[in-house]
Amino acid sequence: MFHTGSELFERFNLSLESEIIYSDYSRSMIFVYRHAIKFTDKAILILYPAKDHGDWIEAESIDFSPWENIIGFQNFRGSDAIEEFSRPEIDNWLSTIPTSCLQYPFLYARQGKVAYIVEGVPKSAHSRKGKERLKQEVLKRKDLIQEYFGSPATGPVEIMIDIFSSDFKRLPDVDRASITIMDAFEGAVYENDKQVRHLQPRVFSSTSAFIKLECQTEPMEGYTVENITAGSLYPLATGVLDYYVVRINTYRS
Image (cartoon, rainbow, N blue to C red; front, side):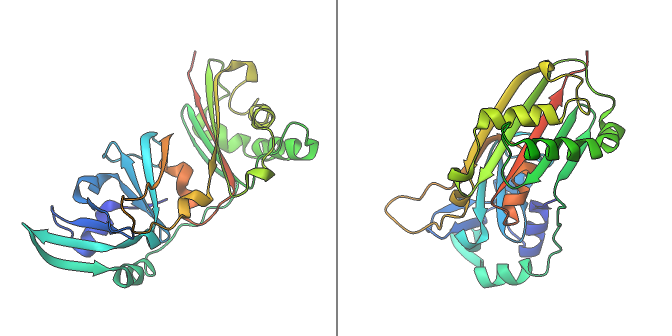
């Protein structure tokens, strides 16, 4: 889904002492994140701890920065700056890289794990049409889910629902939306929603991710999301502001 840090380092020949310079003029040693960087043409993500996470392996936290919040990269040898790459140079390169385009709803399924991304805000249990639409969309993909996931689980299940919204006023009641989502995956991923032992719905402001960093007395705090997968942030990193991600982990009995 993403481009990786190795592509960035190769293109700009970034050294051990290279720094990333943000628009508030704060700096960070970028080499330590070499294996923890993922990016699109619109945003760059740094995953913690700094190791090579797959797109659907949960990271402790992810720092999200739109490219407009980055001034450039600078290479050093000791205390001497030997090379600098400006935003125009970075932008020119980004315009040439291939980009993935997800078709929504998007499904990822592997043994014991499912991730499902839907564009727009989730519907509550009071919205009959919305509830039935999600159920039918999941059932359409039942064969594909079970091809990679296996038959519906009979053991404990945990569900994480991450909702990204540009307007909190448009959001339904999160508890009721969770009921709709649990019901939709019944029969496809697990036999009965009573198997759900852990349910974690969260709501994030997507517009906060694109706040412009500006120079002030102290560096501004960036946009960080904890206990999430990089894949869950892919729509945001391509400019989609309203969507939700359902991640399901099952434990075979």
